Image 1 (spheres, helix red, strand yellow):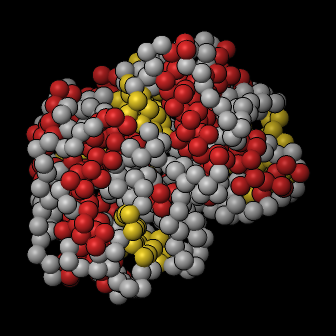
Image 2 (cartoon, helix red, strand yellow):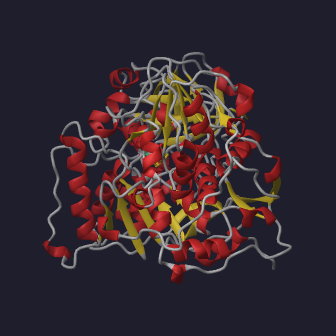
Image 3 (tube, rainbow, N blue to C red):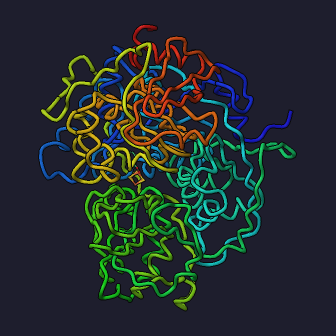
Length: 640
Ligand code: MIC
Ligand code: SF4
């Protein structure tokens, strides 16, 4: 049988189930990664499983998110992470070494392997032919414990790339075009597999930009073949031994197909406040820009920074605007320091920020009031910049430079520069001194817990009837940034659930936490694609702490759905979408769940208006058992 690439890698890792779209499967996980904002919880959960060592081929703990240390909290977390990594057999990438996805691509990604990361942009590794998926911290903890990762077999979408990109059009513009066509829910339950003649014209960083931002489609992951270009990249990283050739069988089929003509693409931009609100840069040319931010796991590779340096050389950023750069990794930063490309960037007036997530997650460099900020990042959700009324636009590094130079939206082709493609060194600057291997004598390592590390809250076992008030009713496409905001003030509380729960739904309704507590918990009602975006399990953990019992929506995003189950919050979908209108915020609901069974709907009664309506749940047998046990951790311990 002729297989596509995703099918091949999945088949090699399948430990349970049939690879038929929609049916439950379980996959063996070769590698895991965590970052500091989700990692503390993931490791507390791993610790609670009581194992002496991780069982994966490779597990890496990165520090890249909570890098502003304006108090003891983040520093406490870093120290905890370093000590717990040493103890349990995990590599520790120190603060300053770079953004998890960029560093993982450079130093650890391997074609044909599976990677599970507690960050939604883990699919960056798909740029090198991995099946790399984002998940909640608890699922990553379970993978570190050697358990397979459970999911529904995704549909596989074949995206055929034809032709070649024009100068100043990039991988970022490819994925923005895919987002324009498919929207932020177009990839839910799907793997996006790129193939066709156009693949060979894209270098690894461009491929990784595309797979990275496949997360914004809601896709399970995205994957490119592993070819001669991948081999050269790995060779330049001194890691040629992990290369293997991987491609779909000629004549294989896909569940869905799409063609992207690379030569027809133009520079694109995602407008506020959704990554799929995409138009051509030329459509908004002339709009004034207040800030330009370069960086993030999407666009701060060697390619991106070299292009930036070349375009900025001998020029200055516009007077009315502030520009900043967070290089993707220490490797990238060292490369441009050694080859001199950092000079024109600094000379042009770009502020050099740390090699970290930085502005992408609102850790500093927030824009001014009502400011227009142009970012090479992947998300522009409301409030994410740290300035609630700012307007964030997502573009390629090329377009960002054009905006920085002119102070307004500008298509980079209209600058009239002479195009110079990026040339790669035969050998990248390789120095893994900032990656600390696990301790040789783990028994002697003491895990250091500062006062910021609070014990894990425990989920309740499921009662026979869920009863309470509808605490909040929201629309479609609610992100985990709405549910559990990030930013420099909230992120340091990631290891302290009671403290962070005070911020749940802050950007939507700041009274949510106090109302939830006063009424002893209750329900949230939402539209389609509820919980899209970040993998942060805090968007389930903190609402659980506030007493959230069930979420009633038209449809869920994959990772958040899994996180709800993991923490014992019942995910329910309307059998008839119109029933969404039968509920108002404040209504009292009653949902009997004593005989919850796979595939069988439950009936909710709205006590405030007397109406009843059916609700479906997507749980299979194992997940029903998890709900009954009071969450996945309790379930895993009971079944150990
Ligand atoms: C993000 O880009 O939203 C984050 C911050 O990297 C998150 C993880 C988190 O919230 O810690 C993600 O993408 O999963
Ligand atoms: Fe960090 Fe931003 Fe990438 Fe998330 S999207 S991992 S915050 S750089």
